[in-house]
Image (cartoon, rainbow, N blue to C red; front, side):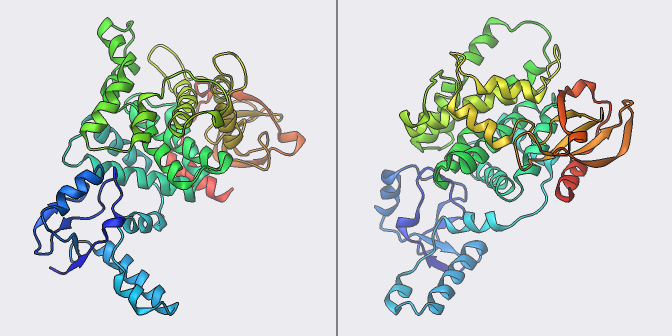
Length: 403
């Protein structure tokens, strides 16, 4: 055991610990993933007269982050007093992990998210949720087009794992919009992503059942749907979440509050953006009794507010994703059907690949087309049900990186 003191100031309230927390004698104080909700919780630990420490033998990433910071300070000729006072920051391992990129295994992420959100457990929910959220942050940051492509494509055909896929899509498009269009600070973007990912945690299993239910909802089901936002907030509190903005956004994510975003509180802004993205994503998904909407119809539904006016949050989503976002199917002037793989130089000229020829037959291979050329411009959206070809999502993502 190799114990290193932990700076008290570096503890992030309301967020899972990225390592095991120990006392100076090696005694266990908190498991990895435990959430210290506020200053009072922290003071309860400190009141026992313990020094907060991390065992670098079991927290290698934290130790490497510490050593890297020390090396940077030495190179910068930092004074010895400042070097001596430096301690490991609880936030550093998470920041390092975001820099580690790799291809996303979207089917595996769907399964992970479903297991987590269907059966949250106090003991490990914090660490598992944090790991899932950080992976979505990495993909949204480093490969935003491929991320949107994968989640929109999967959402348009998903019935078995609907709720978790929906939550991941809403979380990712919200973070993308907040970062690229609204210019929100990164801390607010991350809170937005967490709130969107957890908004339906109290009815994940019910959502998955309703997708496959042909009969009208029962009175019990209607009540569960109507109060799921407040129940999700309560469940998150039970799981240890204490961030007031995160919790309020979850509680209010179905409130109808149209109007300028700058006239709302931070939690209301987050809730409104989630609500608009929720509308968009829900219309993409199939139900046993209906086909999914074309993507352009789903975009239009989130663009206009409850008063049939342009909604600022919805407009930001459309600006971020484009008229034809990745994952959408479109008809070209050549009468070929193509899938949008990446956003393009303008909202109406994304990068696409043909999947069906002008006779309606599958092309076998995806053929890139330049939609900025008149002969290949997009003339209409195409519904998922009218596309008689399917590709593994990994193949689509790989193609999007080449085009």
